[in-house]
Length: 191
Image (cartoon, rainbow, N blue to C red; front, side, top):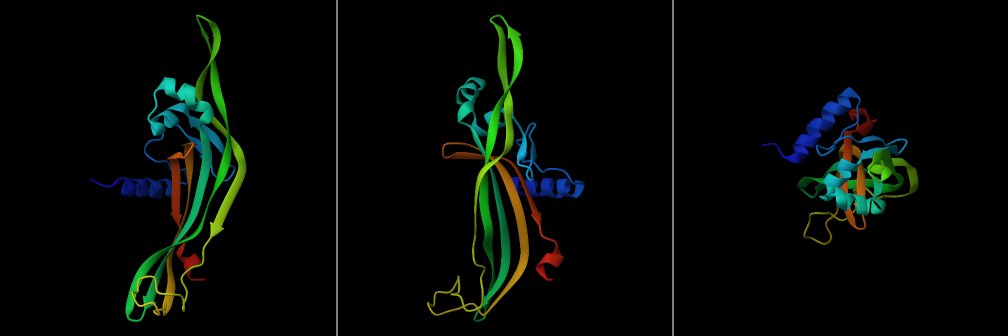
């Protein structure tokens, strides 16, 4: 049976090829534009992500916040002495905190009109933070050597992948709702 990661990669490849947004398998009806940082998250997706009932969601909905994580991961071929191996370098990483508004549908019931929660409208970024790190380079300490004086002899960029994820959070508990990763074109690796 294929792993969830392989399934997500297959879905991502097919969706990117079609020019559409990629979603993780748990998504019911999320629409999200990572460039504008706006969209709509159905209540069912949040309820499923946190394992809540409708009653729990109604009580905790005001606590739900959303982030857009983003990253750039590089794979380098590194040589130290006669040993050559691959290492992953997390070049760029960060997140945007997103503004969200609860959305309701007005319904008429025995007690008159009430608003039934239908989801969360994401209206844009309110803050962001990012960082970068230094890639492996000749002369740096060898990441896999037991000898303290061993240094990198060669370092070559092999591949680059960029991505983003829409995350729902309550306090320190975070659940990925939607994600997309895409490899950089080969021309970007060797100008």
